Image (cartoon, rainbow, N blue to C red; front, top):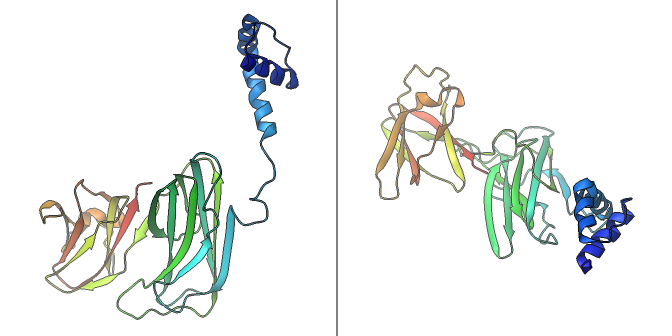
Length: 276
């Protein structure tokens, strides 16, 4: 006798155009002959084609407007996906943007908050046009955060409008360039130093040295990267020449900050690569 599950499989196979099976042996033979493929085709057909994601901006939204008047201001871009029904899945996110006119000293980062059930995480990244990444989650929220790219001038936004958008879809994707987070560019005086705390999810880093970034790995820069632990132990040191041409270097395990020392006055920013 066939079990209730076997009868259900047989019935679905019949709907799919497969022969009816009446015994366990015939069921096994039918599966071997490709009935399982027919079942998968039926399941794809039965996947709903309409739902709350249609025309409600659950899976994609955009914003058009002027730059925020102050640094640190958040703008909701995709705030509605607080509950994705069913168990957690891999979801892919794509960011896009277009600026009518570049700001003088203002820019936008993305703040991504995601989670499964009661576990939540959040990270910031550079909002680059076409940036793509995947997350394991059943909720995701994306906001834009204004910031000041350099400390040498006050926050100066453009009066023109800018355009931001975000899309979310179920499934993974072949990620292109990794996400990055670029720190504010600061001036470090001769013989001075500055500690940059390591962000969550960071795996590699490069140092951007101004006014002219070094593109020759054979030329010392007089700028030292010192990877330090929580108790101030130096784990490894490099001259910034290892970052020539914006080359990334690995962040050693146990690093909590990167101390930058400059022999002469330099403008310094770090660009972190996020390990998503």
